Image 1 (tube, chains in turn red, yellow):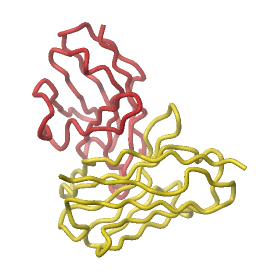
Image 2: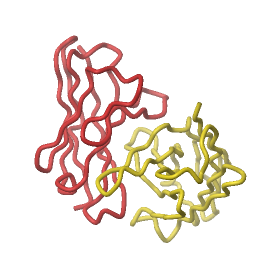
Image 3: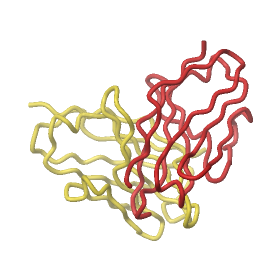
Image 4: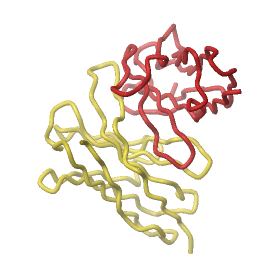
Length: 108
Length: 123
């Protein structure tokens, strides 16, 4: 398919662990990348490939995949992690890129 | 330091053609395993990938917008240009350019992103 599905909204208590999901058939073949976007700002890469963090991204962010679902896990969420999170991957053809609909994370 | 900066009109009329330029610094458009991608985001909505061009001139377009898009690069000027024809109010969005990395057969990623430029389509 040509879709990546994300839950529209997720909440987590401060310093607790949260997992944000991204579902799509293409994830059986291709890794997802994850982006954090705060209001009025450009997206920032947080995870790519199997489970790679760019320089400067805290190690509380991690990624994994199981079957057709990719996961972004934040272990010990901080107030500054409140943001929209988008997954991205290739579509099933491998020729085009697609984004999920985004998940708004609220840190309580 | 790698930076990307979008430039272009802030307002276009319906049916007009939009031309956006992404000027990059800190890397070359001939560097292997990387390129530039265009992504847009309508106000309050999700990100949408539009197109990319790699170091080897490999180009790909969004299937739904392919007929309206053209991407090209001028390595000597460190610029990537996107044109979108027949603009409509639904194309109102912030348009981002981002460096895209080629991770082999299994993945790509975008890093870093430009600040984005808001384009409004209205008569």
